[in-house]
Length: 421
Image (cartoon, rainbow, N blue to C red; front, side):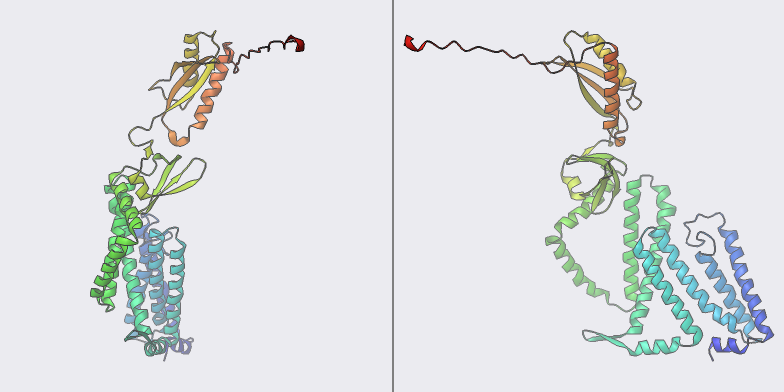
């Protein structure tokens, strides 16, 4: 008799109300303990989630309390309600575990959300099949279905069990890597770029170990991977040279810290801020919103201007031409005062003005000033300085000449009379 049939037969029995009260008490006790333990934890916790009930701890405590109550009451009378609640809570615990781990590790991944929903549907279907008593029959039918892989024949049930086992091991590996990154790397590694590469390396190592354990657990011979490793090495040596070079260059950049997230760089005339350093490429975003994907090998082998590596201060120059009758000392003073009056211009080094050329149209001055925030752009501060220079020169009555050219007109000599020849 299935738990559902037994429950339907005992709907009018007084003991069913006792079971319902016990189940409600188990859920309330699990919620109270989860809330007391996790009220001071962050919302990133896998154990407690955002609202306590969506964490793993609540589902596990509810499962333990309900199963213990069913064992204690089973000696006195049947407990169909508690028996039905156990597979439901098992499915809930699995779903909560998958959902919370994926939320912490891949907060914005659409593929992670799809895997989470797929597992949720499978878990609830399995719970319903167990309640109605069809799960054993379904498992027997799956065991009868065999798939051929070369000379091997594997049942569908074995494939499902292997997939679930491998998935569970990989999720545990992801959970451990997220915990290591959150608890250890954030405190031990202060540099954002170095912490990112350390987190990626730890995650890749744990996933590799977890995958090997999962394959070994389902009976896969790992010695066959030696052939695959040799073939992969040959492929990297020939067809994947650029790809391998980009990956190696990414780790070199992160370890050497020649580029860091937040640096202002110029690559092939494209200037912007480094917003992310992947293992294969680096993402640079300009102030206009354009993003450039630069292969890491290019950042290693070619000349890159890093405006933030040693000193974030950047020198900016602007040219000013005044008339020849202007006082040179007065012009230099006005130019320096105009640049110093702009907020983004730093006081050390101080702005300076120099007479650069005796031009064809006037005296050509070069105004030099420094800024400490090149990531905010140069055009805005250059425009502000030019406006103040123009206002200062006009206020002092200093002429800003237009281009001048002298044109000499020569008359041709008069033609001789025709009979003179």
